Image (cartoon, rainbow over the protein chains, first blue to last red):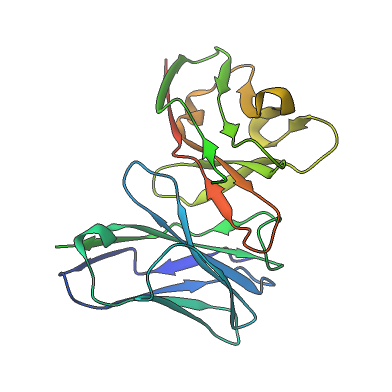
Length: 114
Length: 114
């Protein structure tokens, strides 16, 4: 059974640019959630996708957007990057929508905005 | 606002000693509570969870946690710490409702001395 994978591992961008992060969910999981983890902080929920539809969103501006594909993999897009967007971005998958089940996390993508 | 608080940023214990990591949730309806561990370069892994019922919950890797409603706490414990337990530990909660989401504490970094 393949776990949650994320790509790329590291990424460096400059302010104002756009970035796309990718996540492959664990086999059999139809729900993907994205989190932002700033240095020294706990993960903060960005949004969740269930069967290609957004199923909840945290307190993040619209320049954070997402997509889920028919194979349940997902993308996180961030436009107009700001310095404060520098963080570890985590993807998690679950077999059901919502948050009452165990979240299976990927290793994350480290984004640095210069 | 519904929140989860971890009062200790950093804890150091000797190998073989007992461990208790603190977690408090905001007063009100009981959330679903979780403890996750994050090792360097790895995604978060679920240690245990509490939904209802028995207030003492057993998890993986020899960890347990006790839910205390009177103290709004869900502290993580281990009777004898191993050097491999050094990691970042996160308490998280989900409050039921239409806007439910997984809310993490800021984490406690555990250092184990030999």
